[in-house]
Image (cartoon, rainbow, N blue to C red; front, top):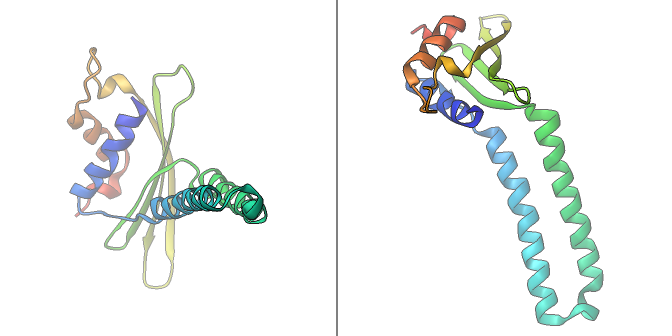
Amino acid sequence: LKNTTDDALPNFLNSLRFGQSHVFTDVRLILGYSAVAIAAATFYIDYKYGWEDTKVLTCWAVLAYFILNSALTLWIWGIEKRTIYRGSKDDVVISLASTVNKHSPIYMLKVQHIKKTADHGTLWVKEIEAPFTKWFTADGQFVPKPFQRWLLDEIPVIGKD
């Protein structure tokens, strides 16, 4: 339920002409694929030249792999902090982070937006929540309209043109 709801958020906000920032995804991909590339290259070199000739290189590759995966973990937990959407439209920058407690039917969304003005910006933070039953049917089908209505009612800045 959470993943489906999280996936529906960008589609809706992008339809309202918000421009989604992909920086978080890009950093994840760069760190993750770099670690995989190191592992693949190490495998190939070890396969081609054997363990005795590559053990020093393998040691460095393992260290690099560990560093990249540690950086990825720190990025996800320390920087992203459950952020599922970052985007902007005109003079508004919005960030949404979602959570669901274990065994709870309540979807929680932390909304932050900054409205830029000529000399400074105004930060607005709000935590909203609603039961999944508000936009899922009894048989588990996602219904977009109630979800979109809930977002528009709770986050006024997204509905403004």
